[in-house]
Length: 77
Image 1 (cartoon, helix red, strand yellow):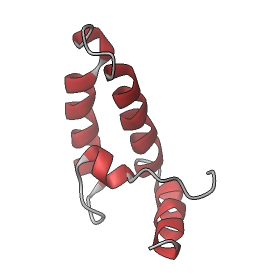
Image 2 (cartoon, one colour):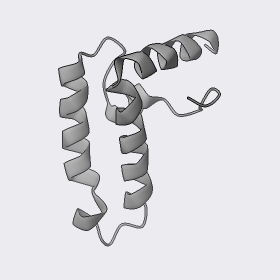
Image 3 (cartoon, rainbow, N blue to C red):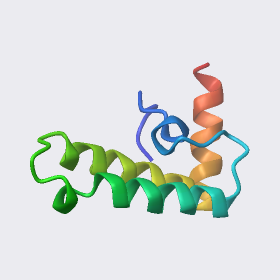
Image 4 (cartoon, rainbow, N blue to C red):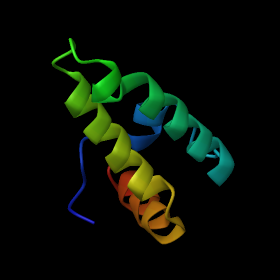
C-alpha cells in the first residue's frame, strides 16, 4: 500500500469504519451499478468515480489491506 492516501475509502463507499465485509460488498455493488461508465456515458466524471470505488473496495475487502489502511489512517488523524 502506498503512503497515506488523502482519499477516505470508507467515505467513498459510504460505510462506517466498523462496517462488516458484507456491508462493504453491498455498498460496492450498489455504487458500481450506479456509477459504472457504461451506464453514465454522458458523465465525464464517471470513470474517475468508478476508479475510486474500485480502489476503495480493493483495500477494504481485503482483511490485511484494510488493517494496514486503518493503522495508517489512525496515525494521520
